[in-house]
Length: 310
Image 1: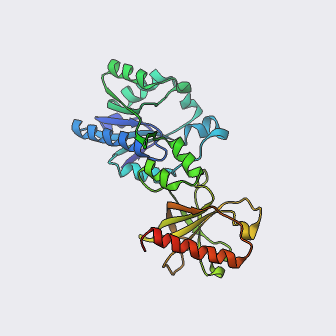
Image 2: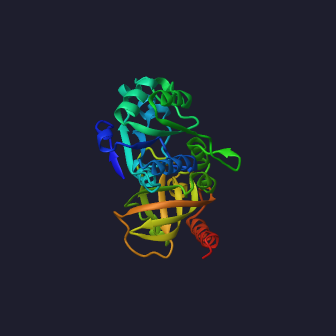
Image 3: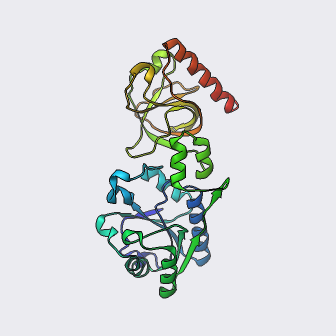
């Protein structure tokens, strides 16, 4: 997948484009349906399937205090989008200047004159342009005027609920990673470099890898989880703890992601690790003694093996 940060000159490089518009945070089932239909239509037309999105998230520029935590890093989001068959990604830097573009100017100057789109795909609730005044209806009207197709996709539902990034964030904030996975189409995950910790887990007999995710990412609720860990091309069953380790640090509020890999022996410092959350086992709690904590960890590991059929 080719990645560009400007649309200028792309019309000459890619004379036939079909474009999906959106932020695509989470690349969930709704996004996947939109991108899938967009890619299929592009192939029918002999055009290049493309996605037009912004980085950073518009709200992080316009209203930083109320910007939502992200479900995916930019790196992870682009990898998932590429895996859906998208050949061209427009990752346009979002600025306050860009936010002042009127909706019809965006269609005329960017989509039509700049990119020469042949078809555009958006979700039912897509908004664009100054103050979000652009709607799918306006986009369809402009499409008729300038001669390109506009496809507006209806909401995708799972168990009667409309799939949305907002709903997924709520589920992760409650620790319901298995329910979130049903809406995302894959297990929610965090990734990052393994960094040195205080080695307390090793002293207890359960060495842990301390992960350092990117700032701004949504980390599931505090608790203990069954996870699948990918590192160095290999995959391992694991048990992860998210939280403040109250047994040792009392009211310390700094959250950490610590992972104990089952059946692994080796040094992980500096390695890049992907941790996929499969199920929450329990809340994080403070134990009366280290012995009680160790006993509980053994139970957590037994439950993890049982739930994964080991």
